Image (cartoon, rainbow, N blue to C red; front, side):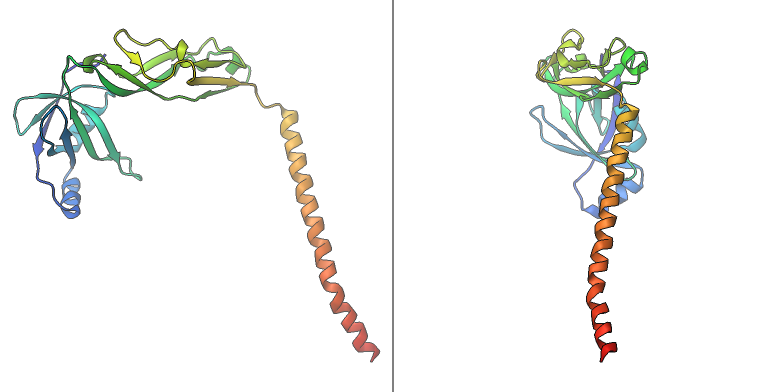
Length: 231
């Protein structure tokens, strides 16, 4: 379960242009905005390393202190990452009350994937759902929800209904319609060979048609040549 022990100190900042933001990021700081809780939106910047460590625990409630002031419980609302380096370039944080339930997105982790009989037989296990929408008190939001798939056999399809969640956590996704994981039969060697043969035939037909087209295109030239020699 999440706890309120994770602390994060940030510095308030006035919104600036893109040049100021780039300077901020080059200095090892990450800009962000604090919302909600009936208060005004507050711009801030945080040390990139400290922020990364604080957010490492997905779903964690943070004790946020702005300019050394009284800590406020917050949760991560949204994060933006650099598309190339993957580094966090902006965060939005949301004030919360510890006695009121909130919505959150929690990772779904599968265990026992290598032990599943269907996998040992060569079946293909595919995780369809990787994140779950939940509702819980901020301090009850789990870092992740774990489900054991070590008993799956070929042909199995597991729905969200079979996934157990911690006490105090409510799943918001449709448990009878959301597919979590499937275990499909292995592709037989014969099927692979048939596909290769079919592709080879198509290539051969294409080459044959191209050759016939080329011969047809040369015929008029040949006729002209014969006509010239006859004259």
